[in-house]
Image (cartoon, rainbow, N blue to C red):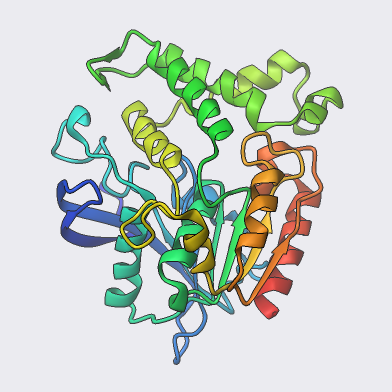
Amino acid sequence: MSVSPDYDIFDAGDVTLQSGTIFPGLKLAYKTYGKLNADKSNAILYPTSFSAQHVDIDWLIEPGAALDPERYFIIIPNLFGNGLSSSPSNTPQTAADYPNISYHDAIAVQRRLITERFGIARLAMVYGWSMGGMQAYHWAARYPDMVERAAVVCGSARCSPFNTVFLESVRAAITADPAFSNGRFTSRPAAGLRAMGRVYAGWAMSHGFYRDELWRDGGFTSLEDYLSRSWDLAFAHRDANNILAQLWTWQNGDISNCAEFGGDFKKAMAAIKARVLLMPGATDNYFQIGDNEAELPLLTNARSAELCPIPSLHGHRAGNPIKITEDKAFLNAKIKAFLDS
């Protein structure tokens, strides 16, 4: 018996990407929670992060939480390349021919979704963690009159050179697998995915996390037990060609890299009118506080702009604290206050 998916599809048709390539039949998978109110003022957009699908991030959506479905209408658009929206794994094109899709391409289709399907003219907030946070920044810059608030959690307005180097190590680890040939994976790269997870383990969590053996809080008996049962399996269920597609999007993320701003980063930052909340992880290794600190004074036309680091030893994971009680409470409290501002 077939099971219906728990999400909907927005068929964007043939879409011309920033690169000039036409993507035929581009499809955006999305999930909604709650109800849109009469004046359509309670909509929140919550884009997905790296390799994640909506089910991986909807833990934040619950009654009484910051993203309360009894109060807000929350839309999670699945980022292209995540296996639900158009991706190398589900398109007629071969993985080697799958075109590069930028954040600018992604948010343009997201905009069509909320305007064409729901008639929403203004979002109460765009909220995102990691790659989702980068999408929130892109939304605020490209569609300033549509965004009331932008919450960027462990993200930045562009991928820093240091972040790019981290992603190169991830790419090198996975593509070293013999299953990688002529620009694509011809079979599942089990060794490459495991190596990728081990690289990620050293970047995603902080020095203090390992120093204080916080992995024991998860029931792991040793460091090797933690690495093998957590990070060796972290990406095992993902399609490797999809991972490469999203790595490109991440590395090439830059709100100013479009015709409107012509690479002028200060101009792009000054275009943002929303209330902006920047929440870097205090110990995040690749989306570092310094990036947000440098961005803050460039938000010259934002209605308000606040830098609020997450005081945690959980590194990048502090911004996605599914099982980290203190970080989850901190995040919920700050976002609730931000939405009420």
